[in-house]
Image 1 (cartoon, rainbow, N blue to C red):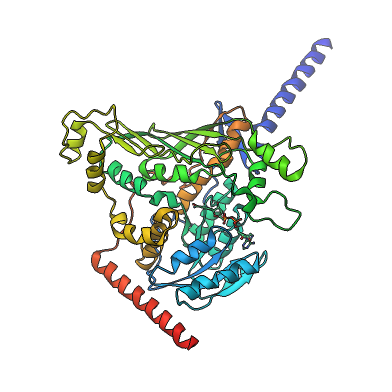
Image 2 (cartoon, rainbow, N blue to C red):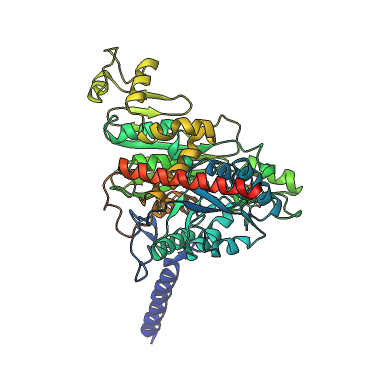
Length: 511
Ligand SMILES: NC(=O)c1ccc[n+]([C@@H]2O[C@H](COP(=O)([O-])OP(=O)(O)OC[C@H]3O[C@@H](n4cnc5c(N)ncnc54)[C@H](O)[C@@H]3O)[C@@H](O)[C@H]2O)c1
């Protein structure tokens, strides 16, 4: 009898252990993501592609002679985008929308200044829904606070519009997948507005990297290090009880690199992410929050015991092809603005902040088609100024050649914002794939939630989901799409004629 009792106890114990094991197998993150451990790595499952959907890699939409745009979110950032679009031929600004009516109405002045017709104004929490339902809008351009990017973009695509979303364009894995599914289902573009991909140093360096100037690029760094002290009080507040504003509140509630894409976007392009390589695993680590907590306490008058976002967050990523990317985020401490942007190649190095420079030796300069004036160049130092100048001239990116001068006149972070917008409209007018697709959006924005998972689990390694669902290796090498010269001239002619007529019609109406 005692023997049977012992066996029974053993059986119950084994059952209890196996039950507790299976219930702890799948865990759920703060943002509702299901994950499990696999040999010490946190693994998130890739949801199956719903039937009837196919990939939007290389998605082309029919050519548009002109592009009719609705803007949603007109706070500090949005109005400058409206203004930039008044300089792009073949664009009509049809609608302006902000939660605060006056902000949308204020932008009419920008249209007036450009002799363009007034746009329809939408406002309130759900004003964007009416805007998205219109049948005379092709593109919805979103520059709201972070929590509204997703509902507006989903609504836009559901209603048959292409969408372009400010950064970060998605705040969780759930949002990343939903945007991918919606873009695949509707065949509408869903672009991340990552302007730093269009800055001068980044574009020229991308061109150099693509032509082998640095050998094989094996490591890259990027960052958003920008003390936002002078901005915190100007972010939109929803009513008088909102003491923090959306951005500080978001940082208070969320750990991880919540603003990764300025650093990650340009280096991901240089490393051909989902065009022959993919980000495979990451680990993240942050400092404690000192300044974040203090900012909250000053504004609420109460003790803040839980400010989730560390003052400085570092994320390390390893790719399928054995490359490493380091991304940093710090919007708190006193230090100079810095996006790092460094590419380490087997034969040379490019570095943007704090000092722009290229390190290449004489052999590599010659192999890159240069005739160095100094024949004892070593890669121990950055190139002398004149050597760097000739290198940059030789490798000036064709997109900068085309838009650079105009971009400097129109402005927007020195012109890069205008180049980004011009490329978006160019690709739509010429029926080309956009420079950044919804998979880029997801890969760059998922760093926040994956980093949070890592840090909440003792900085464990986290596996990236494959947002392309198996197609990351289909295209080899990142490329910008171009129309032929003839097609380009044709579409530009039509675009200019459209804008001329639009302005004439408006002037006649006002007479
Ligand atoms: N790419 C860049 O260099 C860059 C620079 C600055 C800001 N940004 C991004 O631009 C976005 C806006 O930033 P900001 O500095 O202008 O913030 P902001 O707080 O000044 O503006 C946000 C605006 O969104 C509006 N809004 C809120 N809910 C809305 C709704 N339901 N419908 C319509 N409008 C709504 C608010 O009224 C406010 O005017 C953010 O995503 C930010 O990260 C990007």
